[in-house]
Length: 554
Image (cartoon, rainbow, N blue to C red):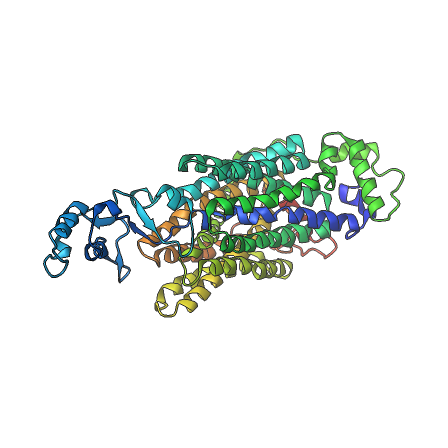
């Protein structure tokens, strides 16, 4: 009995058909790169202070001292949320008194910014923060906006797999692209913060759903060796390309509405892909649509210049392929034994903390030393070598030590960041980028590692539960950045400490490199600290890693 990969082996691995699918599906991920982190610029908070209206009739001298000074991070800065009482200043100004000479300014009563704020336009012409005054007592709305996007991502993660199983990979891919693009366009015309945030939730749902659909579609259409590269490098690097485009768009377009519109337009270029990218033959077979599946495979063979066999699947094989999916297991099976409970707990913590580190560092780039556009670009470009290193580590080194070492690297350099003196801002930036490199590498590897730890019967559920924990981590990550308003080192101390801690916990997971994939819960490798159950190393031909990587996409 042949499996699906054996039945279509005559197509080859790297023909014109596979190259087309590889690059088009990878390119469809690019908009996700800048949509996922667009909040870095859309919800940026420029320097600001209380507005002093012209109607206050203050002399120039009193206008210059209308905003009190405050001590912030060891420096004297103008208050962002307080001003001296304008009626008092107006009275002194009308009397011809001078501040400092006739009146002790520091003794004047203060008040809130009753007339709004004045925002610096040095970096941004407008953001949602300046549009709706999300500062001072409303500053909690800024990080909540980003968190709500990730709430949408969490909801999309729940439903995307189910709807793609029900309606097909291709239909869901393009439908959710339309949701992401369409609602982003509507978002441009938001009239208040509440409308913007609700739409951001829907955009988040579409963003993760089309990402997952493209990932699954590529993994199911492409052959085994191409599938590995697509899953580990293709998707990730094209996502990073989209992330790199974000600061370039933002640098030239400083108004948030025009920036959001510019970021949305590339999604329209994906429309012609509907007539090029086929449905997944694997999914069609699972739905008993055997003729459609064979038609797609025959067209692929024609594009590759290969003559297909007269019969690609026989009836017995088709029924076998249709029934391959494991049945009869639920999420409760992730808690069935002490061993799987420990692996599930450690996996959930690992994914959540890595997600906090990745998104926390990505969202914090405007607060780093130097130009926020350059910082964001550096944060994006550092992901490319991180993904390449992760791919090389997955090919040749144990999972446990590879994941743990990159987490240690990321966490330790983040902890060192607080020791850098303020005048060495470049060194501080280098340490943060090294931290991002380590966390991104670990994030890339943890998909594969987690899939290898779980048995076939609950592998999708195990990876799904871990992925859900990752979404929870992304939801709380904006508040790690928010803590930087109180102490700029605090986000790095927290993220660094948690990353080092989870790096230590990772060493307690079993080692899966070169081990056969478990099929049942009883066959799972045991959690034994630094030791793991011995197993026979697989040959290159039957290397479980290839099978593992294909399973991570399903």
